[in-house]
Amino acid sequence: MGAEDEYEGGDDNIAENLANLDEELAEQRAATLRASLADYELDEEDADLLEGLTLGEDGIEYFPALPVVAIVGRPNVGKSALVNRILGRREAVVEDTPGVTRDRVTYKAEWMDRRFTVVDTGGWEPDARGIDASVAAQAEIAIDLCDVVLFVVDAMVGATSTDEHVVRLLRKSGKPVFLVANKIDDARHEPEAAALWSLGLGNPYPVSAIHGRGVADLLDEVMKVLPEISAVAGHEVGGPRRVAILGRPNVGKSSLLNKAAGEERVVVNDLAGTTRDPVDELVELGGRLWRFVDTAGIRRRVHLQQGADFYASLRTSAALEKAEVAVVVLDVSESLSEQDVRIIDLVIESGRALVLAFNKWDRLNDVDLENADRRRYLEREIEQDLAHVAWAPRVNISARTGRHLDRLVPALETALESWDTRIPTGKFNAFLAELVAEHPHPLRGGKQPRILFGTQASTRPPTFVLFTTGFLDPGYRRFIQRRLREIWGFEGTPIITNMRVREKRQRA
Image (cartoon, rainbow, N blue to C red):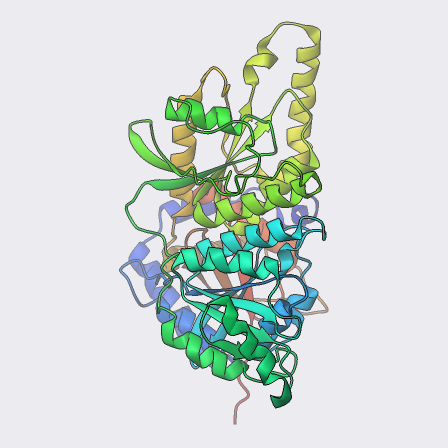
């Protein structure tokens, strides 16, 4: 564990003490701690968070899913500049490195007291070959996962064949679309925007994303059609839980789905030329219905070989957007690859619950020496490469024969239950008090940061906020997470702990 070791300090009785906790007393103490935050400089977001705590019988408010605005268009038409302009800050897009670890770049934005999410598909651009297909593919996913589309065209270049291709998709979607004629830097260029009427998307909105011209008018219009709560990002309650089966090519994802569905439902080979083939499947497993979400989403065009990785990660990201829990399929007959770990990291980044399915396990049971060696190496690989997801349930299966497939259901149920777990505020603060008493944070520069108050801000995944007087070491934060897992389990879900460092108010 390294950095966390300095916080160990031997055994403690935190788990037993919490088990014997008088919950009413704990809630009263938490309320006192919370009241004492009034002595500190809090911002509007803090107030919202603390206000939310008084709502709902378990003291936590669910914030509804913010509506989603997707920004779509060819490369170099100014999508990122428009995102920056909407956000009112430059660093957002420039500092992100889209395409390295993730392919969707989302930001929180606000206009006229309305909060919404902006999706910048600029992070999705592959190399220039096959650009038409890839722009269409990005547009397709963005359209699928948003409430309103801003379609950006370079008015000085005019409409291209790629633009026309995307227009066909937009028309079919039935979503509200705003045609943004970018790079209209002054009134003399306005006629260029008017030429885009020919695309058949109605009135083009002339803007200059770089200079900000026309953007406010555009956003005013967008607000008129943007729903209060997202129609796509909100999760329906009580429906079948949504599962994404992920993994690199040929690890047995399709075989697993076919076996689970009990029939050949997924086309196992890639069909040339079919760009979209939704295979969301309702499947009965373990006596209940599950919705397996479409990870095949975009079938790679055969002649676009160079874009294979790009499409794979795009599919993975899109599936995760729609899923609640991901089953990452790993092929035990081969060494764990960088790509395997990257897919697992995408799941963690997306905040979804996680189950690891080790496929082709039957091959390791053969008695020959080679397999015995492979088994030994596999354990070592898991220890080394998957140490950061030691909390994820592991299931050993054979997708081909269907062996042990029944073990998948309890693993999914455990992971989803953890993902939905919430800890009452009183209990969480009692845990923090015990922890700090037994394992105080080391002094830093002669000062010791204190935890003033803690709360679980949300579930899915469990997200905790700590109000502190100074920064907690990353090692100490990991230590808090580890102890949370030891006491409450949280098997199969990432945990997020955010810090809010707050200073005492100056007395007037």
